[in-house]
Image (cartoon, rainbow over all chains, first blue to last red; front, side):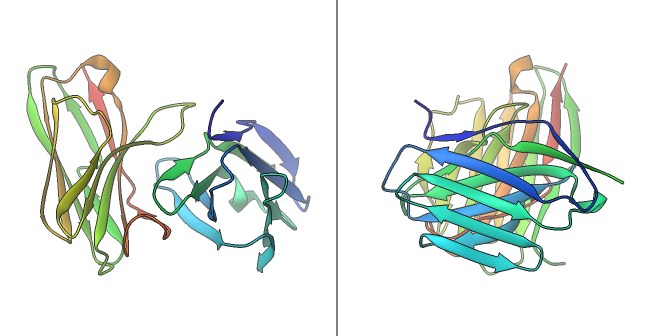
Length: 109
Length: 113
């Protein structure tokens, strides 16, 4: 079983839609959770960093962590064409980092 | 300059060539990383340096040789690579290992002929 599972998509939504991106994990020792956005021909860019279960909001982005279900989500409200990118989840036990494979998102104008 | 800078952005080399990738971070971080990114695969951690000391070598073939002369610079020396080594090589840094988020450069796209 992989440490981190992420649906690769691709996911295609109309502009203005709410987008939900998800990752599941198997290791209950994961403590810190991150979401990165990667545009084509660029490196991953940190979007959100959370520690505890619950929600963290930053503008149109909300990160949600459910440690009991070993499930994390990233919600994008009022999606824009500029949100078209690959989104990677990442998590760490404090000793090792693990990344998902990434979900490719296209927001259609 | 700010952030993490990688050069060159693109590199094409033959299997018998020797080349080096360079990474520089301007964030004052103490940890630096090399990753390999291939299509439809998770990022593969290759090497970790913390305060210039290598703390992890993730079973990487010896044809990849890292060098970290100081906390701001990281190199990846390449020699006698194989076609399957073609990928995007990403450098990252973080304040310390490994519980804090990593900040990435834009990578070097490597193609082996």
